[in-house]
Amino acid sequence: MSMDLAKKTFSTQPDYLIAGNAEIVTAVKEASAALKRGAPVVLNSDGKLAAISVSGSSAPYTVTTTGLYGILAEVVRQTPAVHTYFRDTFFTNVKTFATERVDIDLVKGDRRMAAFVHPRVGGKVLKANGYQTESYKPPLINPYDVTTADQLMTRLPGEDLYSGMTPAQRAAQKLMEEYATLNDATTRREEWMAVQAIVTGTIPIVGEGVNETIDFGLTNKKTLTGDNKWGGSKADILGNLGDWTDAVLHGGFANVDTLIMGKTAKAKFFADANVQKMLDNRRMNLGEIAPRDLPNGVKYLGHLNDPSLDMYVYGEVYYDDWTNPDAPETKPLIPDNMIILISSRPNYMMAYGACTLSLIHI
Image (cartoon, rainbow, N blue to C red; front, top):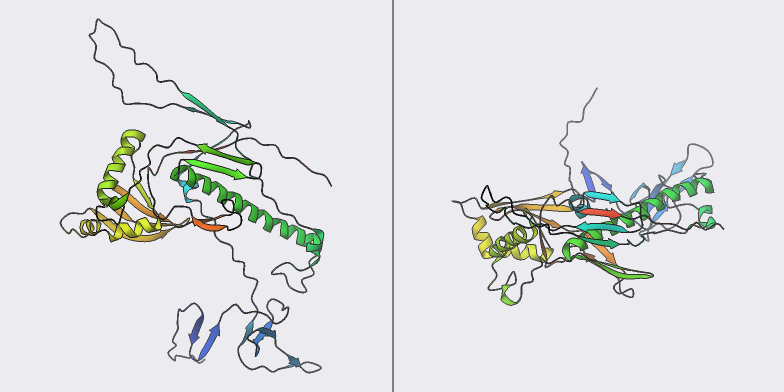
């Protein structure tokens, strides 16, 4: 038995691997004609993939080719991942109503203390604040796709040229693919609604036959102006964070422990001289920056000790085709110049109302 002990050099570049003098290339190229998956192909003079020619009337056959050659891979589908960080983290209380309308009773507490009284005087009434009922009929989310019989007569993307699939089999496969696509679209809408509720305090419901706004009455919103903006000459980032966490504790009765920043806000935060000085203080541990990627499209940036905050950025985007249908845009879910201060365990509710669907028989 013999072994090749010669030294090999490998590269981790994404487009090729080198082992000795052999190069393995992976790339996406345009085909000059319809090709079967797994078939040997060659890069022709036009830079397109073509089938390798075979000569000979009986086995063994002769294959003659020059240039780069390889095996045609399966179809590659480019589908963006669906991230649901806000929905899964902050809206953990999911409730389904058996009625079309969702009714919520709002009870706001306060910080009143029990009064001192003499033992022979008796107790003192602590009046209840009462409650307010909000009722809303949620809009219907009902995406669908149309498949015609003639689409099932031809090969589906990724199907072998001679697979032998029947139209019924193609219909079953296409049904599963369409269901996944429609389910992803609905999930993205839920995530968008969750972000809008937290970022703006409102959810605009705009679509065919519907144009209304769900308003949660959010009051804990701050807007910096002039030189007080982050990055300005009078910016006080650490002071802002301390004041705002106290404001949420006092007015919202919540202990803020999470800071989510937009792209521009993050850049100005780390570029601030006072922030850099605080984090570089060797005598006091006021925070630590240790970025790392987390699941669901979130990146952890680090931790501040005063105020005590875990810092994150969320880079998910959405496709806005309703604000200006003639010029749709891809926008970030978290505006670039915005930050969110929130509790990591708010237990917000995601409520679903009952709906009716019409069945059309053709």
